[in-house]
Image (cartoon, rainbow, N blue to C red):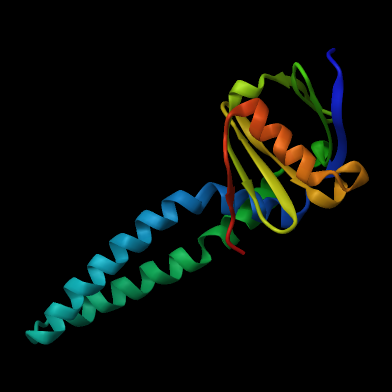
Length: 167
């Protein structure tokens, strides 16, 4: 194993699953909001001309908006509910040669090239991976308060930029 840069022991929590869900739905939400705005403009035109379909399309638009508002919350709840309870504790090792993920049920090594996105909010750093569940790192669990150093190292090693997650 190459030189260890960061060793983090963390646990799967509801909040970490919510951060993962926000990272997952971030790009899709932008497109969905644009489509809803276009649909709202169309519904406004239907109301202006007195169409009998305006009421039904307004109801449909309301349902779509509610679904979008609740999407990351429900996805976070589903991720937490479906988690493998044997893999509750996660040991992450960030080394020169790659990332090691260890739980009671798996031990996986991944290259930094497998990272497809980096996201962060006030409390979490989310590392999206090819063919692997995203890694959610609570900033409070990074030893010595080095969360910024971990984020900078991941940016250097992966060539990715960090995107902010909305609360």
